[in-house]
Image (cartoon, rainbow, N blue to C red; front, side, top):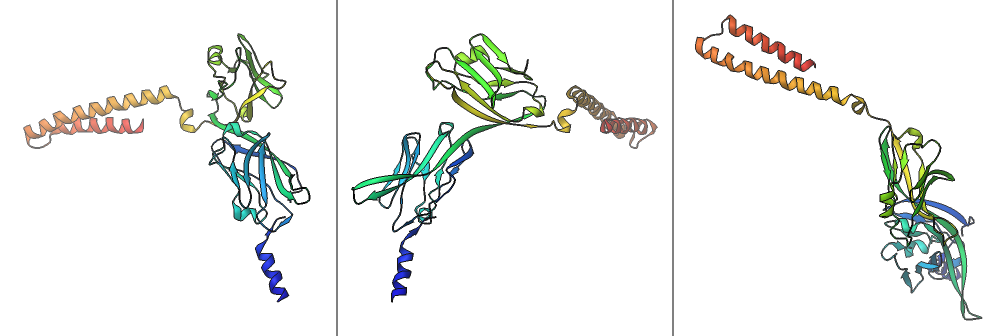
Amino acid sequence: MILLSITIFWLSVCVVPLSEDPSITVEAHVGSTALLPCHLRKVFTQTPHIRWHADNEVVFERSFDVTHEGPGYEGRVDIPEEELCKGNCSLVLKDVRFTDHTFYRSFVVEHVEDTNTDKSTEINKIQLDVFQSVSAQVGSTAVLPCDWRHLSIETPHVEWSIGREIVFERKGKESSQGKGYEGRVDVPEEELLKGNCSLVLKNVSVTDETLYSSYILMTDKKKPVLVQNIKVSVSEKSEESKDDPSASSAGGINKAIIITICILCSVPLILLQFSYGAPDHRIIEMRSQCISLKSTSEHQ
């Protein structure tokens, strides 16, 4: 009887293991689904109360009787209850947006009977890095998208970088290009004034394959404001694209001319066939010329 009671008790509780590592970085592509990991190690007799924050705003909250989604996250976040009962408090974030690029923290909330208050204990910290992908072929021109229109500034000051290395910088008419990018990068002034801070990268090379970040520098903020992360992937030109397009075009024109001649040749052949009833030496000669032309066309 005692053994049966113990068995029933363990079946009714949520057994929850806890994460030792408090700092994790998660990367996600725009439009994808991200999983922000979270695990507990404490045993709860009912569904634990978990709360996720982004900066100081509540992103998602779940307990045995409460489910709440923060502004801007409606329909995009969840912690499945069956997973939570296993100790998995990981946050599922769907349809990732670049505005989701921030610092997240997870908490377990417990009610303290003695003081009749709720106590929040931090579980872990997650840095979510959101990026877009751009593909380019060697020798082509790539455009790395960027838009600052959601920011309130009069004179935009944009900076593109790879880590701490400056690739390109523009403020008004003044601009500078990083080492190795001279003559290959630009953010046109007229486009920047419209809110388009996209970087034009010319003559792409294999060494350009990396992660680029764009920032807007604002006088009222201590740090530059991150606008976009772009992961550039570079591929070699295919054999077909390496061929000379002018030669290919000329070859196509020559083939068309030869085929037209063959068609014109067939008309007198048919007329002669009907006139003489059977092919004579003139018909045979013209037919041989057409076959020769056709063969030449096929080999070009």
